[in-house]
Image (cartoon, rainbow, N blue to C red):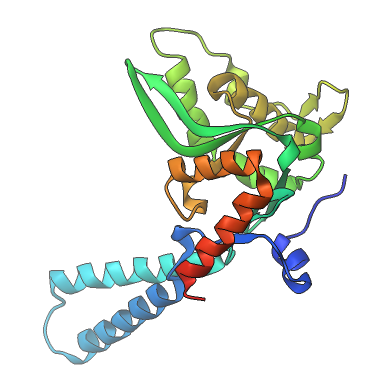
Length: 253
């Protein structure tokens, strides 16, 4: 199976013609790190050279500064662009790799919702329904598959809780994915890719979607982004062109 490298490595040197989207969650990493580190250094110096006991307020600011340094560091580790969208495919860029979705493989897209206690709840994630699971899995690295299994497990648990309410029994394999999988076309998968394929099937049963795109990777709210992907499915070239103009105006170029 051929696993794709980061779209940033593939496309930027060739004059990438698609739209590059930066997640809101990854912004201001350097500023957060520098400001927090500056406050931390000043506070440590004040505590060291000032006589008397450390005040409770100083302990609180010290703790907040340490958290700020950690948050800034984690933000800097994230890819600069989280999503690449062109007329042929969508690429989700993650620090552990990337997955790609051809526009022809997108069957349906929408905000994932579940019903709990008579109320409809959004899971703060976009769902993608595939036409061909083998095409998607063939471009997915085991390393990224394993990471996504961990990162997105809480969405699965929320969907299971909604499905299993009112005493309905839930199969145990929904929580522990099997390490073997055979697709409808007969392709065999093992290890992390098989676990991810089983997760996709479980999510499809529970939510109607195979793949999850988290809100943290987006530059706008999930409803607006979901609608944009729907427009991209209908007219990829026009949607990408409009998005490029929009991002260009927003960046002041």
